Length: 182
Image: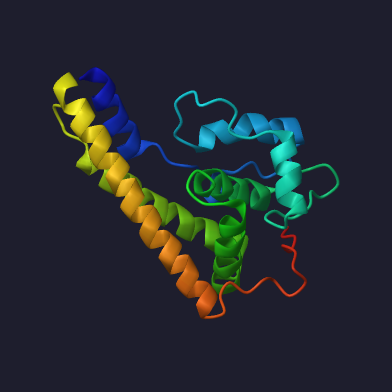
């Protein structure tokens, strides 16, 4: 099926841009909103990001405040991770996971690079799972298999997050807010 082949190809090839490919000058909110759909694989699920969402992420401490009214590479990196992770995790879980990553990786660039490497691996796995020459008859079985994989992965993720909390992770940044990086 042509649509399945196109999905397999996108899962194998489409990736967020590398850190160095982000715009090197600050972007305004409307530019951020129009930039982010290029970072993610999506199929017309509506708006991926709104200015209200960005403002809420800042209020919730997931994202540093804008520098003036401009958003930097750091903001684009965090927003990419947030937009992906919020598809399967709560905002609180995303915040906790990013806080641990931030404390262990030391910089937004290192965290983003690690995130992209991990994303690449799972997208390739899913691409490899999709049949090369799928037919319409394969679609229900494939949808069920993917849904069950998502269920199992979500279950495992939830337990790992619980174990992290039991072990004192995530540690909030010292002041509870994300630091600005230039």
